[in-house]
Every structure is written in C-alpha cells, then in structure tokens.
Length: 164
Image (cartoon, rainbow, N blue to C red; front, side):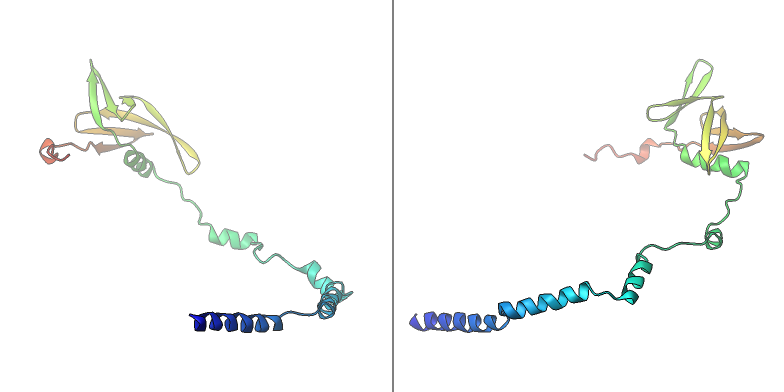
C-alpha cells in the first residue's frame, strides 16, 4: 500500500514539474503580448487594402447569363396534361347520388357534377369542370378537352377483418 502511495506522489511531482515547463514568467508573457499587439496594430498598407477588398467566402454573385442557362424554360402544358395532373391529385373516396344529382365524395368534402375547380399550376389558374360522374368513373373538362378517370373500387374480399 505504501508503494502505491509513493508512486502516486512521484507521479504528481513529475506531472507538476513537467507542467511547470509550459508556463511563462510575467516578463516573457509581457513580451509575447507586446509582439502580438505590434502585429495587430501594424500600419501595413498592403494588409489594409487586402482587408478592404476581402469578399466573404460564401458570398458569390451569379451573372444573369449564367442564371438564364441554368433555369429551364417552362413549357406550356396541354389541356390533357393539366387534366391528368388534376385527376391524379384528386382522390375521391366514393360516389353518392341524391335524387338526380351525383356527387364525388372525399374525406370531408364533396363535388357535384357540374362544379368548377380553380386549379393553380405553374402560376396559371385553370378552371376545371367536373363534367360527368357515374359509378365507375368521373370526367373532367378543360375548355373542349375531357379526361375520364376511373374510380378505384374497394373489394371487400381483399379486406381482412380478423386483424387487430
């Protein structure tokens, strides 16, 4: 046990002595600080010009010519492409008939046959009409172009009720 205490004491002594080598005297410290101040306060015109002309490393400018090359020009979509995009976005959950009116059902909303949707695609607003609704599909109309989208039919034989 005495041997362990002795080794610990020697280790602390050696560490203290070696640690003392990294310390400087007050006069040495003062000389180091004065040389640092001299460098910082130097009247160096070349250095001053470089500092004035320095550009932040992450700031850069793109010329308009480069910008035009990078941004692809948007082409105008055809009426059929617009109708396909709208039909893909609409996800009706079913069809309902009230009297002689037919409705497309969504989670909380419904669209009646003949309703007009205002759709914004690429910054342009289009008026898409729900032209026809039947039990198997619905038809959208934009200008004179129509697009029929079949309804997804749920089949009860594919639903398993025994899963918790």
